[in-house]
Length: 119
Picture 1 (cartoon, rainbow, N blue to C red):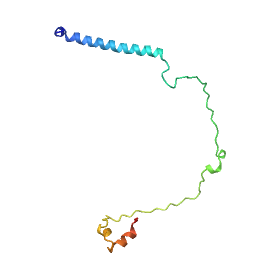
Picture 2: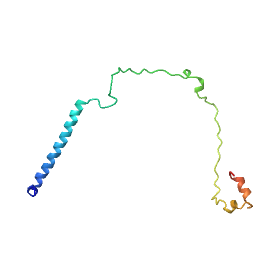
Picture 3: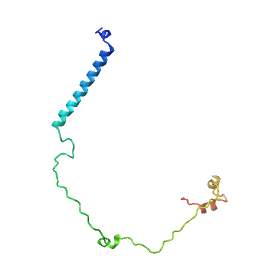
Picture 4: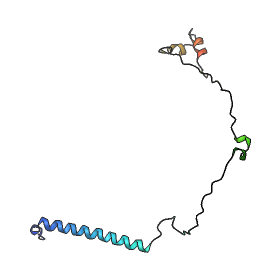
């Protein structure tokens, strides 16, 4: 049917290769034609007027150019910072829930002195 049984694999590969070459050649030609017609495709290039560039000139900056409020004050003496050391006290087992649910529990006032809470 349609002569498919009479076509060899070599002819089939040549046909596919030719079709792909024609396809990619047409894409390249279309891209070249569009590139020649539309040169300004970027927003930055739109209405571009060349400006003569000026060379940068270095300027001298001194501390006297700024008000004294902006200049940090350097202290001559060292400032001592307090350091608190963390002491490992072991595993904290916490408090049993009965301490908080029973308002008459004897340990509750001692616990509430050591923790922050909001009632």
